[in-house]
Image (cartoon, rainbow, N blue to C red; front, top):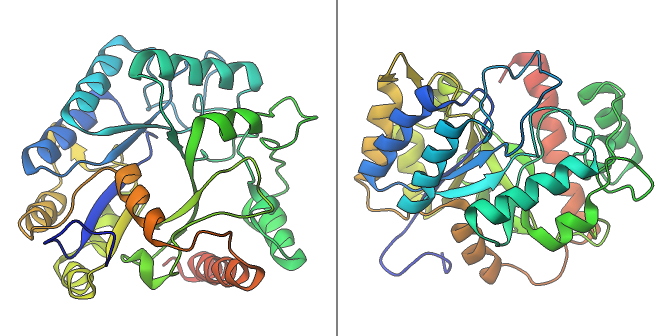
Length: 310
């Protein structure tokens, strides 16, 4: 594909959601990736969560000085640091502003990559607003998100940060799929929409939320197919979820990553790969049919997962 550096015929990278990550369980994973020369994107929560969180108690924020120091080391090594909202629970505008201000001060001002987190009310264009037609909006609101309201793009709401997103963020993750090569999902894995003016660019990824789903999706057979296709894997996962237990890497993960690293692919962080894809994809926003096709693919996959678990 035209976006690949000369002499390379596939790309593999990871977008690591920070849920459940702490220094103890991610250090061995990232040290291993560094040894292999596979540079990925690590999202973070810059702000603390003094109100507490029942769901995400195991994850560290950058208010933990040891964790912050290690993330700084990762950036120095060539890993990308990105945003997963200001913290693990819902943030009003002031905390979101503080989070981006901290990131600019700590890691240098830049165009950030952002991934909406869970059911945070400040998620931008989330819930029913991910979709363009009424039936999908109903599914999004009442089946996938159980009536939750998301207001990141609502200027009248207390969670509004759309203007900050447009100014600070270059890429926002949209849909995720059970397909290793994102070009098998759409010819435009990086895209714009007229209907979402606060987001400059959306991107899709593959999806394997934990180490077991990683092992099922990413294996020698699927990687051989990816290489044969000359494709790109942008994989969303949580490297804090089972990839390292008591200091030991999961052997499936170790073996697979050693295999990947030996294939001579492009192993750059997500934004670097997205920049290259963006330069080779269509310039204008997706039209209605293209958007509908992407949403339908996601809906079908999501319903299948709910019914059959895969």
